[in-house]
Structure formats: structure tokens, C-alpha cells
Amino acid sequence: MSVLAVILARAGSKGLPDKCVLPLCGRPMLAYTIGHARQAESLDAVVLTTDSERAAAIGREHGVFVVERPPELADDRATVDAAARHALEVYERENDYHADAVVLLYANVPIRADGIIDRCVRHLFETGADSVRTLAAVGKMHPDWMHRLDGDRMIQYRENSIYRRQDLEPVYMHDAAVIAVTRGSLYTPPAHEEDFHAFFGEDRRGVVQAPEDTVDVDTLADFYHAEAILRTRSEAVISPGLESERRLPILTGAVAFTQHERR
Image (tube, rainbow, N blue to C red; front, side):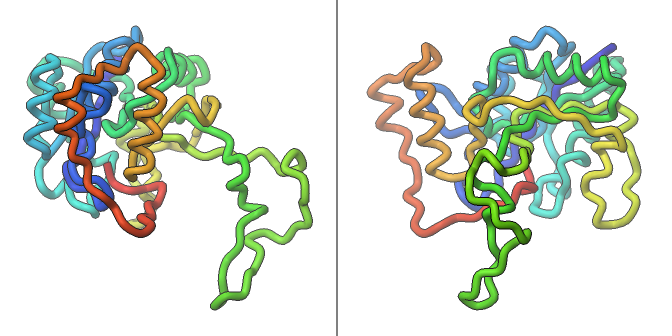
């Protein structure tokens, strides 16, 4: 089976603009995802789709095939699967190649567990599923402990009287590390205009990992979390020059992101 990795790096971001190229422990954030893809034995090739000139330059520097993402696939309304299909079609047209499956990797995820890409690809083919995503347990951020607000009046999201964390039903969320889909699933037509998850197909599987196995950088706090982890590893290449050139923006107030923020 032929598998193509598509790295998604969009310049626009409400929290950290062009975050995928920010220097993180001596490397652009994007370089970590390129490294993860390079280490995966199940991938035939790696494609970077981006509207960022800086990200494109980093991709070419690392020997990655770069697809310039058109504006209509790079705004807040563009979907991940549309950008992936465009990148796939450009790569296949220019390289006489045909992919049976596609692995989607977000460029703002600098930390992934060793071998997780290969685990997802293997699970996709062994189960015959349409898609496989990495998952992590939600832990204390559980829907049974969440509330809606009517003014300042708290309304339970789901009625229950659970007191102990160990009594909570296991619930998982996609942690953004890996999405593996078959070609057929990627081209599944949506059932309706708002069906943004059609490309996951009908048979959707998950590979569970620990919450600390992945860091998805959307905010400055996420960035520093990733930096703290990388500083404990040999991946950190800190030099005084790079440290002083980081010049990260200072964010005030809370910045909220949905799980489906465009990449």
C-alpha cells in the first residue's frame, strides 16, 4: 500500500500568527513534524501544503515537496480535507504517483510519540477502517463535570452525581498527532453542506496514547509547554542567538480555540 504524508501549515492563526515557523528550541516548529514524517517507515513521501512563504522555504530546505496552497484553501472557511486533496492531486500529477492512503500531520504539533505514525497506518490497513486518529483521555476535563451557563446559573452538561474521577466513563478526544485516511475516505462526499467530517468515512478507529505524548500548539502557553518538554530531550538545540531572536508575542486575556480550528 502506498502512503503519502501531507503536512498542513497555514500562515493565518488568531493566537500565534505563522506559528508553524516560530523558533522552538533552536528549530522552526515545522521542522519537528518534518522529522517525525521522515522517521516513519510506512510513508512513501512527504508533502507540505502551505500559504506561508517562510514555511515553504523551510520545507524546501528539508527536501520536502512543497505545494503552494491557493488562497481559497487557506482562509478560515477552508477545510482540512480540501487542502489535503489539493496537495495530493498536485503531488500525484507531478510525480507519477498514486496514494492508497494519506496521513495528515499538523505543522504546529512539535511533539509526537515515537512510532505513532506507523502505528496509525498499520492500524488503518489491518482493520480495513476508513480512518484512524490518535486519541487521548480527557481526564478531569470530562463532560460529566462540565456545565452550561444561563447567565451565571450553572446547568449540568449531562445530569449525574459522579464525585470520584475514577468513576467517570472513559471519554477520548483527538489529540491532533496523526490522522490516517484511505483515499476513498478522503474523497467521501459530504451528506450535507455542514458535514465537515465526511472524509473520516463510516468506519472510524482510534489509537489511544497518553495525554503527554502530544503537544498541539495553539496558544503561547502551549508553546512554552512544548519548549519545556523539548528542553529535557536531546532534540533541544538552544543557542543564545536563537533564544534572543524568538521574540514571541505577548498575549493578554484568554484565547479560545475550537477543536476544529483550520490548519
